[in-house]
Length: 155
Image (cartoon, rainbow, N blue to C red; front, side, top):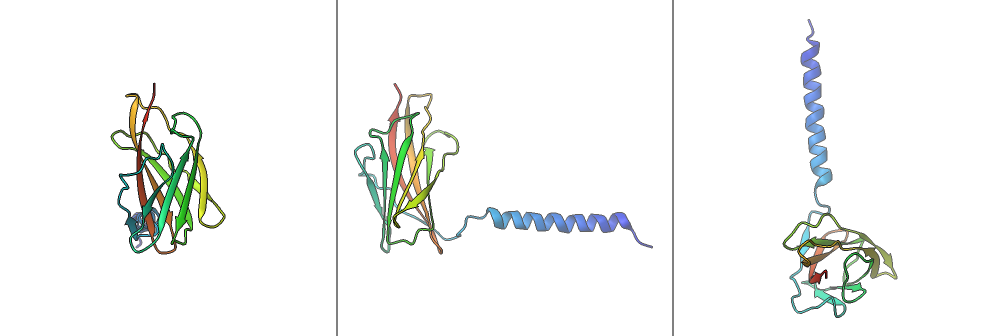
């Protein structure tokens, strides 16, 4: 005598476990190997491009225009990558002390080691906001994260 509800429950459990495992693998950062570069504290993105040196060789340079960096206006973002075979470049704008929402545009490749894109920064209710712009460079084997910081004010 077969017990159809028991068989259906077992099948549902196997499917649920498989879906959970698949989701975990799919949501895992790819590639799993991430290298975080130290914050370059001596740089001012309002004045011009800033660069971070990658341990073991290489460099990531970030430029944001117009300058000084405005709020609520389109920003032109340029990233130059040296010493890495970049497959994908993104920039993740986050508020240092306040959640300002998800803002991570993917930049388009131009001329090999140059990537460009646009974004806009929202206004903070306090009027002053410290931002972190993390450049995410993905290669075949690793993801390099280079953080840059700057402050905006809204008058």
